[in-house]
Length: 82
Ligand code: SF4
Ligand code: SF4
Image (cartoon, rainbow, N blue to C red):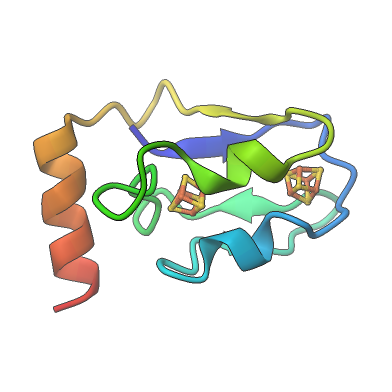
């Protein structure tokens, strides 16, 4: 499942550097956004979504429109980095 940023985002930018592996987070207007084609929930390189850990307002949640298994997330990661 990809992650998504809700409207509670304050556009602080802290999460961007945490996604340096997949570069899925970018600045939007007015809130930041996550590209579901690039977010692998940090699978397979971390145990949990790094961006969620650092967001000061807890506005990064699972995206119900992009449900994926761990195997699908691994395949996405391999495709991104192939
Ligand atoms: S969960 Fe991981 S891959 Fe997805 S946006 Fe957050 S840091 Fe990037
Ligand atoms: S860390 Fe949270 S509040 Fe800051 S830009 Fe990212 S999603 Fe928005």
